[in-house]
Length: 285
Image (tube, rainbow, N blue to C red; front, side, top):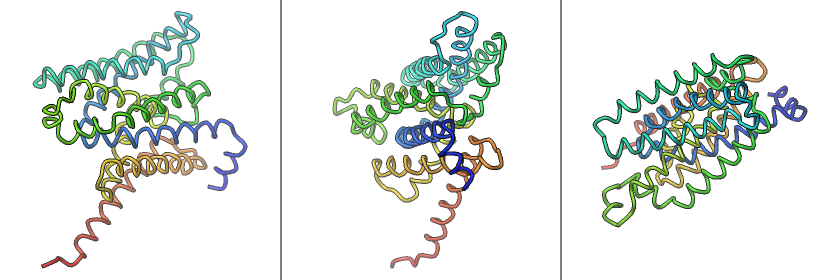
């Protein structure tokens, strides 16, 4: 830990990693609460795996097409939002085929990404790191994009909190009150897509859903209201991301995987502790 703190004061790369991790943690705590309560983690997983296709296409256009201003995260944003809209429309209109479409998009996004990466000449390790994440490789441009996305997500989640609350807990009642349920549901999926993109550089595409759900599941053990869950999950997510980064620094472990293991351990400890307390608590008669 001492080595990590010393490196933090000396290294701008590590400071960018900490800033990116904090932004991603806040974002995933806020949106992850809606995702878990609405029970749409499987939709988030489908969106997450479409991201690689957009990244691969953007990288190909950057290297081969000469579009120098294009960044892999630009492609990730476009692919994630497009996947969110397609999945949302299918889940609203054709529920019986929802799992098939999600599986198809999941596989297609990954396959397209791998093909574009393979077709792009030159160094590929930086792009492939998005599969499992490497927060220490966050560039200044990536940090700016992450900050913008986090700001947009938090702003929209706060502005439409009551509407999201309604569609998460009682969709039919919200519809009878005249709320445009379909529109807000699509907006929630788009926010989920943007959150996924912010988390990709932290833990990677493969583990992004774990970070989107584990802190929320842990915070749900000791919270009762949605706004409390969001605040607790956001704070816990930041602690877990930065804790994973600090723990992995000295032994040179993968930061993303370390963060997920830490999050899983905290969740199991919290769940086991709460279960033990309930069993030891004397029953009221």
